[in-house]
Amino acid sequence: MSNSPEFSTDRGTTPSPDQIRAQLERILASAGFASADRASRFLRFVVERTLNGEGDQLKEYVIGREVFDRGEDYDPRVDSIVRVEAGRLRSKVEEYYAGPGRADQVVIQLRRGSYTPAFEARRPEERVSSSRWRLGVGLVAAGLVILAVVAWRGGIWATVGDQSPTEAIAVLPFASYSTDEAAQLLAARVTDGITSELARLGTLGVVSHTSAQQFAGVRRPLREIAQALNAQIILEGNIRDEAGRIIIQVRLVDAATDRKVWVKDFDGRASDIPDIQRQIAKSASAAALQRKR
Image 1: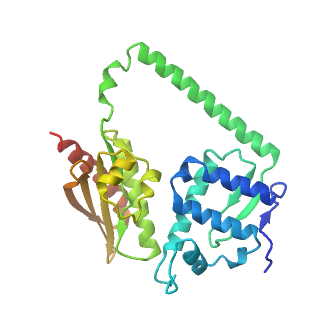
Image 2: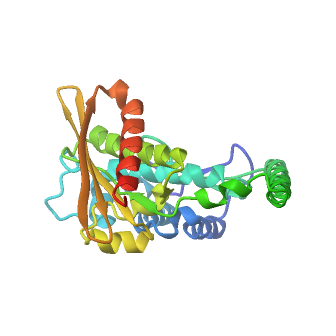
Image 3: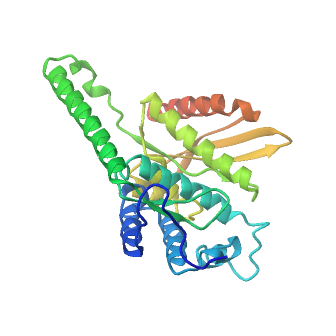
């Protein structure tokens, strides 16, 4: 196996190591990575090792030891942290290129089944197309803002000004009692799903999933976490699979008192999870609003 960095030239010219490092810094400085220390460290490690010709050495055990500070007794078959975090990192990189990095010249790819990234440079016409797309979106957004201002001045929305959420809720990463990768990914998916459902309700301000994710596995008083996230309410929970039956326990914590104000269990089959997420969001929102009455 070659020790040289793996560059793809299918779509354009080959990016230089300096271009790749500049792109790495651009990604790590983006909003999605700014507060994600674990993902940033992971991405920097695999990119630098590949550029140094050590891409073939990027094995799960090495990453666990070097990136996640696991000890000599680390066993990837028992501890799935690398696989779980690799999936999350891949999603974050894809989100970056679907958003702020849409017109970037250099693409850093994290492919499934490998921890070694690939690099490619887009053709000029691809970047022009992306730039035009972003310009079009920007013009549409600007038009919507103008319409909103006109509507507001005309009094169309004057009656809803006092109905904006006054409190924010943060959904912390749900815990899983299993080290199995599928169980860990299910917990992450449920956390994200509940966050989205709460945002759709619009009854509370909702801290972004990306911001709350930084507190995964962090042992700090919930009052401190809530303060860091500028949230008045915390939703936490755990998920377990008992013979195909998914059981989710959720708890609502008042950040000001650091006390649980609501606890409830939900259960169903894997196919029921979307409905369960909606039920949790509605019930938690109602309980959060009820506590002030």
